[in-house]
Image 1 (tube, rainbow, N blue to C red):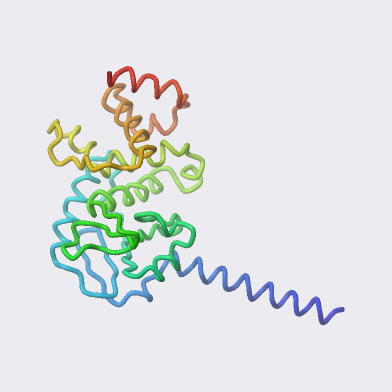
Image 2 (cartoon, rainbow, N blue to C red):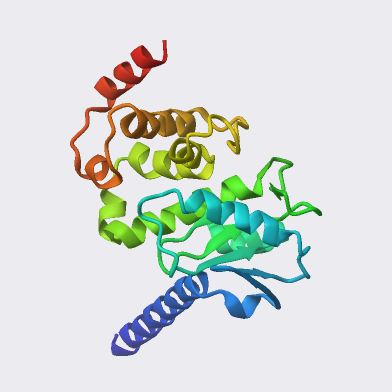
Length: 234
């Protein structure tokens, strides 16, 4: 009986060690990537050399992020391009269908693949989206986590978490700050829930004049806000 329990405990300890090792690999996956390109406060990790044009894309991402009142130029954003379905599944597991992922522990940003001109993030199922928008969206999650903390992020309603990232990522917040209309705004179609959440944030900032912190802290009834936004957009 004692031997059996010892065997069970050893197996449990080995399983726990493997789980911890896996999560450590997700947070700090640099050893899995042979190439690294640095530009501004971005570090992009790949297995094949990246087109130098990526620097122009990253400049656009930084421009969108810097419009946010919580932008912190000291933060380094780590981006990892999986390049194969197997590696993307390894790093994302049940989230492998997403166009990108920001893992909250350490904030690595995972992308499936990039187009040859690096202008588009390419998923293995054929979907494509703007690299600048995807990266600005995911990097905004990092900014929010640094601003309010991980536990607070986990407690946020979905629309607060994803709506701000979409608002910043699309370039609409920058356009509002610069009073430039639709110049530099990515109006590509996004899933309806993300667009709805973005419209909530856009209304609260541009119409109500609320700050990021005020929106995060406010107890806002989602149904009431939706009706208010719809009435204003008519």
